[in-house]
Image (cartoon, rainbow over all chains, first blue to last red; front, side, top):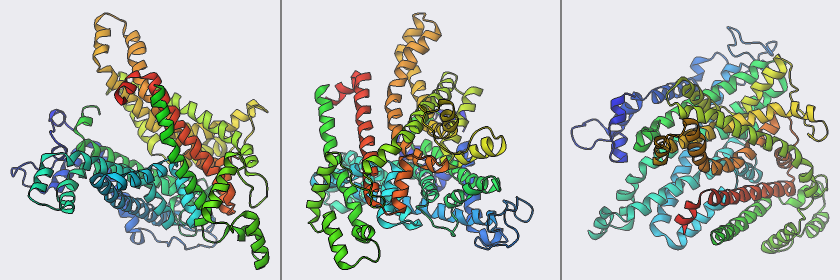
Length: 307
Length: 316
């Protein structure tokens, strides 16, 4: 980011986000946003790491020569080599293949759970903020109770009821993220509701639903986007933690968490087994964090001066 | 001040009440009647009925809840469905290991965060700043359990300096206790310092821009005095509250780390409870954790008001 960028004063979140103010910036808002993202060093670095890992995971069959469950007799505990670049595990399975396929679970659970959390969280937040009263109290109390459980313990509680598995752990992660989205949406509605344009919309006879969806919702997007960006790396870490604890995706299906759990027994014989799945997880999370920082800086003009 | 604090306590009661209902319902939402686990798989219907009666499962749900709550308030956390031992005893047995880990982890978190947060704020964009910023990013993104595994690979497998697992109380054998504690506590400390060091850095940066810092400088105070007495003191007020909130992360991190280092703490007790479908153990441990978490939040609020009188004025 150049000095000129930093001096530039943003007057509104949408302007800071690179959204066009007038017709002079002809490009689509999302493209303008991407351009500004790529201009920041942390945005470029984050996007690069994430894209590499996403592409490798999605196109795993084209990249690796082994299936993740394929056991190669006689090749147990092979150290990294040209044939098995991350080595093999106790069943002679190719760790590189398992890491790439395992990445799919991380990505799916990470993005999926946050998507669901955002949808339900924002919906309930809009409802609470617009209606206030009893509905508001009920919804917010529910979130208070959820927030009384530290994250991992909420996950453990959900698994205790529904049993382990990737869908349950995704659900648990979605549930523990809902309060944050709900609170942001609610606060935004309450703030926006008092502004003149909402009053104007009401004066011309717009229905409640229309006001919330057409007038208020778009204004809540910048803070929600920032929240989504920061929540995803956390969700991916949490998924890995839960599956490391044996509560998420179950073996033999590979996930980074359950591979690391499995590797603990063989750290002396096969140190590479404990290394590569964690490295993949670390790089993905790091990339997502850098991306989130860049996105947050673009959306929040006050932070730009500090960093 | 008393009014504010009292109000906070009263506000917490419904949350605790609802959380206790949630934890209680765990047992009843779970597939399969708990009596099956106690009576065993080949129990006859008569035996099952007897167990249900003994466990109070034949009563209406709300009655069961209040009986359960009353027992808990009297300090009776129930008995393990597996071993029949009182759950309170099991928790008591595991608590010291978790305390060792979380207290040492907390101290290291604070130490590492100050080390990583303050120098960068005092000399922004210097080499020191870049180094510690990099450290914070890595510490924030690194998976706790992978960091633990890396430590074992380095210090136990390769260098053979430290034992990879086990726990001894510091009261029984201080030297061995510290050797065993070193890796788990450092793992916990590093993982948590990622967030806290960034927070400290921004807090110090912001404080340094305040008018009273300029005043202190312009009246000719030595820079060292300005930093120590004026900047750091004020910058660390918000840090106290975040550091206390870390306890939630600390407890969560401790569960994972207990598994990595085979540490016999509460986290492992909870996981064993889940694997054995030992619901009384799961319920009591969860309730215990929630209680600690909520209490820490409360203490944080108290500390905040105590350290920064402005908060109280704003809220009144």
